[in-house]
Amino acid sequence: MIVAIVGPTATGKSNLGLDFAQRVSRDPELNARFPGGVEIISADAFQLYRGMDVGTAKTPESQRCGIAHHQIDVLWPDAEASVAAYQKHARSDVEAIQTRGALPLVVGGSGLYVRAMLDVLEFPPTDPAVRARWEAQAEQLGAAQLHEILQRKDPKAAETIEPLNARRLVRALEVMEITGRPFSATLPRGEYWQPDTHVFYLTRNLDELDERINARSREMFSQGLLEETAQLAADRAHPLGITAQKATGYSQALAVLRGEMTVEDGIAATALATRQLSRRQIKWFRRDKRAVEVNWSHAGLEEQGRSFFAQARSQILGH
Image 1 (tube, rainbow, N blue to C red):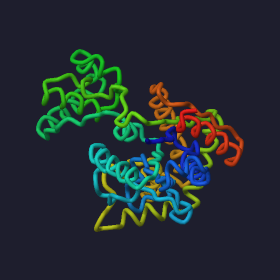
Image 2 (image 1 turned 30 degrees about the vertical axis):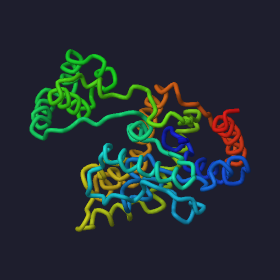
Image 3 (image 1 turned 120 degrees about the vertical axis):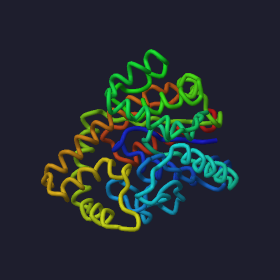
Image 4 (image 1 turned 90 degrees about the vertical axis):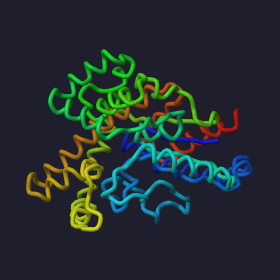
């Protein structure tokens, strides 16, 4: 069995995951079923990176309540994260956790990473020469025209990719040229890798979510995001790579450090980028009708945690 708590940034997934894990260990029936307790697997693309703590809102080790966390701090910031590699390692974690008699709890908001771990999903081969050719086309024609090309070649795939997402458009066209198959044939089929999987989609009222995002953005800067970013940028052994530099919060912090914007401008830009990210995440997770939507409000963690646990417990035990 796998349980997952997913949803947009700043909804409170990490705290809910820890609360749920502790309640499982205190519940006689669930404790008997999972004597190894609960172990958490992160599904956050940027929490993979070592040293990127403040800007990714990692739960500090001292606050993890002794609960094992996986797929955190596994890459240096100059490495390029790979969804295929994440799938391989995260699934290995799942199987090891299950072997220990524990319950794997997936927590995160990176939609493709969640999908890669939980769903039947293949990763087609790559060809640098073919990719370079399509990247040149993207540069010359623009992403919108690439989307039109994909629309003609594979309408189903075009529906799943935003018209201005040049990176994904290039990948789709690359795969089609290499394999001779529609890119849509490699897309998820809505089938879980392990059938006994329970996904809970955590949501909040948008106004409340935006308040939380604005507050978190300010807290990140007050809690050392600029200092953390400066330290990462100065690391000659493992400097911030292209992917890491684009992470929300870090790209704005770098701009502040370069003197391109003030701290207040950096906070505002981070909040805006995070709100935009949250809307993309909401759009992504709402498409999956298998997930159980759990709406949080201003109520405290104790009350919400108790309510969520009752709901999840019922599903897990089949009541």
